[in-house]
Image: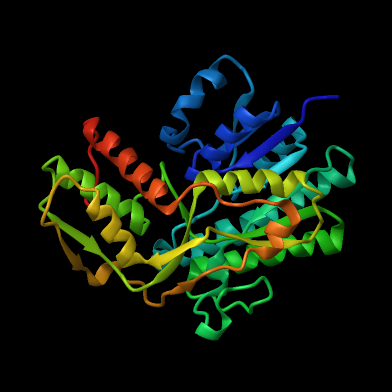
Length: 341
């Protein structure tokens, strides 16, 4: 049997890089990752020797804004599985860059799915396609609708969430209209090593690491500390994504995926502060860190996905947060300079 190929858009991101790690360890698949020419490679630095020796990981250049590059990449690797993870993924940034967010996330997804539709029609490849939406599509959910099920209505509370609602609907549309085997996920809050520092928990961990090194005064800058989240580990998330495309995939299906531990942003920060080697760190809320509208009850019902695949989270909240803090301690101790954000 021929070796299968996985095509990962956004391989240099937190999730994409962990997915590549998981597939390298747990499958014999070839892995082709889409990167832009300017993509930072920090998250996949450990994979570059494998790329350089032309092993199981290959990087191809392309951009969701350029359909020609997507067509060349897909036709070049003829994937069996597509994990569409690339996006403008920062909700706060979407308030200042709404057009870019909509273009990359909605039109970029449409461009990729059009290329895949062409390839299927021409029998170039017929992949199982994971379209990564987001729990943010549900927006501000009333307390009586928690935990959030797949059929909850969408009330997106940011341009990012609006863009992911479009992504979500496109994935399901291409299955219904064109027979593509697209499956959509709404992943709830997930984090861990390599998390971007624009997200709250990673920003806190980085600030603590910088305070411990004497690079910042003992003050944590924060936004909304009352927002309630269910936390998952990125390493559990990528294991779920592998099961998604390999366990009896159903074209057009859509699933909530998330962890099993819930707490507020403030409680999460308290845990991180409790691990710090510096005492007496104060917390200050900054107006600029608050979203104009916040999705503040992000608690999922994951029973549909669990029943279909048997997936269960394996990493505890404490381990995830401790690993995130250890990641930032190592990066800061390495002497690299970081913005105090």
